[in-house]
Image (cartoon, rainbow over all chains, first blue to last red; front, side):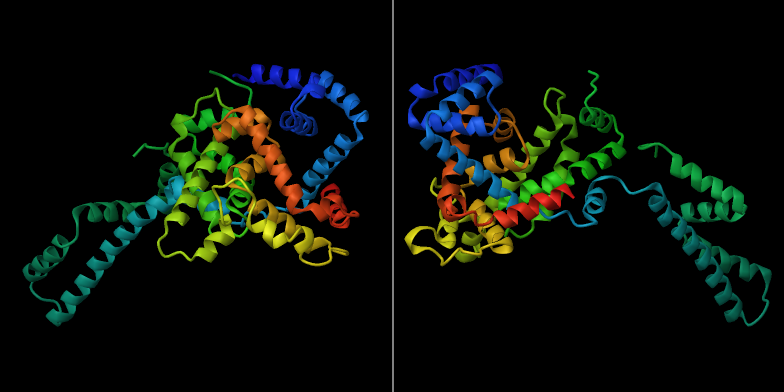
Length: 177
Length: 221
């Protein structure tokens, strides 16, 4: 039965309310309370109720049951509900994606600086250029190449250039890499 | 297919990859989803917000299954009902749960047709819970909540959708994947059970009317 059939059936029952079985009659009266009847059927039920005070009383009690449910007040969502949902679903903003890369680059620079300092301390002063070159190279080799490239590139940027790069990365479309 | 329905436009944008449209849907529907979860699972059920969050995660994952033939609201309600049913099953199957906790949340005969915990706790009839004169505000509200919680699952869901979410019989039927005649029957039985459980409030001398009036006034202001 589709929606139109259901409406026709409800309408037909309402127009014959005086002949319905008690269970079906109760359903029609509840549909009347729920504004589910078309106007003509609702008018017919109203007239019928005027002539049946006992049924009118039952309808009034059912209306009061519905009114009482206003006391079942709802609570609002916690303030961070939507934020929590979005954190579980939507990808993090690009700014947050970029931060680990910047952190890695900074770490690479730090490794280089500490390595150089250690080398200078251990040698007790300026040593032969060849020795320092070999030591620097060994430190560099321990750092992943991609970090070194990123660090070099980032260190070479001016403040304006760095900001432009950050904005361009943020504006990159989804799935754009 | 193009549409003027705001929700459907949002869904189309969301399906096309615009995740800001999803954010709008979350903000728009968070209250309705939470409210449905809370009233369907029972006001004392723990973890309602977790279930509601799970609903939106499912909506996010299942966005491509949405077809514009359906109302977005009904589609979201269907997902909400399924998530709640999973939660009910999960709680039922927990081996180490205490019977009392389960009963408090879902009643003693959740699959049955007769009201249970609420009827006992609300104490209608000759074994009533005492005088109801002066019963107002919180006490009346607590009784109403207990009575709704005590309804059998299907009756409660039909009632919550029709009464609190203003769904038509057709929308309730679609959400519950049942027929309109079945919805009529569920709502009729839900009303009868509530009337029985809240008989003194319904047929008494206006007990609870003060609280109702305050609710109405609060809404108007």
